[in-house]
Image (cartoon, rainbow, N blue to C red; front, side, top):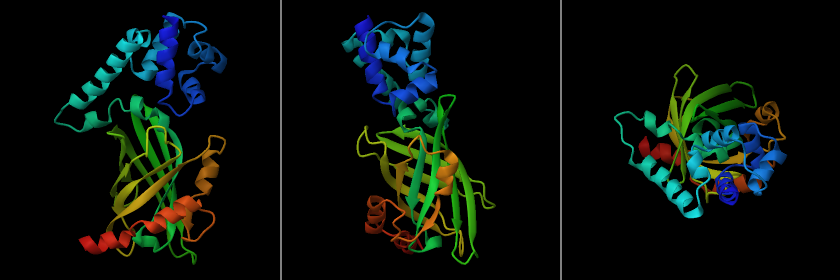
Length: 264
């Protein structure tokens, strides 16, 4: 049982950002958790329940043999895909199980008609709340002459389907616009640099809809949220303050005005 449990636990942890984050979120000492991972001992019944609740699986699944564990995990994915309701609420329920490896802070980079050829960098925070994953996006932008000051906070919910991350967010601005973002990781282990498409509205000269490529870059845990927010803003497309991989990719991809022209 101990060997099966450690193998299953390692498999579940491989879907998360890091072992350190798992320990922190469950509330386990890292040394103690390493013993479980290495097959050095079984947790108590209480701790076993804590682990099962965190990963969204039963205790029986945690200690099952390899074949049974794989079958149970496949059944979980199958059940998720078969759920149907009249409301879209179910889309966001229980998503923490799929998205825990993406929780934390990212810098989002994209371009909008509001800021011409510049790149806007935002702060994106994904956090878990009662089995759901909530998003908080902070935008701060100032024009060089100080004539335009833009501070926007968007709150939303996040879902994971078909290796795609979906965000629906509502702004706290006067117009209260809704934005939609789809991120598509290159593969399940790629969590540091994510690429996608975001759609929203420009703030000037009028609320013009636009769509733009967007790239998220994970922020290391050692950097505080306050410091991460200070690093947001507007950057020229040639700015060395923007990761060259991100800068070059955004320049290569279609500019948002092309989309505006098509729908205008």
